[in-house]
Image (cartoon, rainbow, N blue to C red; front, side, top):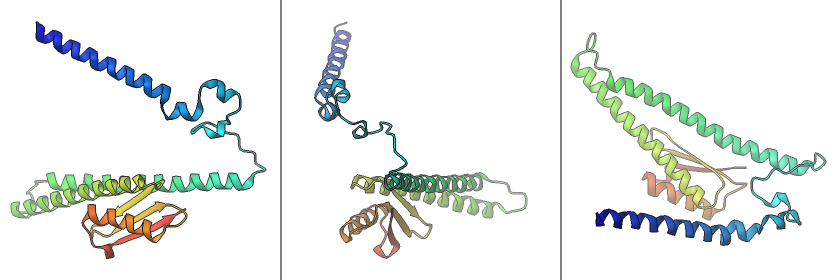
Length: 197
């Protein structure tokens, strides 16, 4: 009985601690420091300063509108390219899975079917490995401060990396290349880095 009471008491203390931390974060956290309370918003802080707030854009400001549209097109480019890559990979995975599971010996000898199945399994594992590496590389590049990144690793282990940036310095290219070489274990001559604005 005492053991259950200790466990329950421990859980209650954890819940209280989380509540206190949540309260302290909300009253002294980043959002509170940036925007103050709602009264400050009403008294003059512009809505354009709040991330995610809808802001009216006047059509007479063509440069700003063009910049916003260009940014959406670029973001759309990365999203669309990522979706297309994932669709293609999903299709390849399905085909390889069906080959790996296919053990129909009507017109093909058992050893040939077995070899085909093993080859399909190896290709499937390589495809999964490439997909995971691409995702890891993209995440690590974004952690370096880039808005978006897209990596594509071919079957020959050549890697194309596109980074959302107007241009890249030699130091930024070196950082991206370092990420790719460390995680994908490929030589530098197999890596291509491009900026997309």
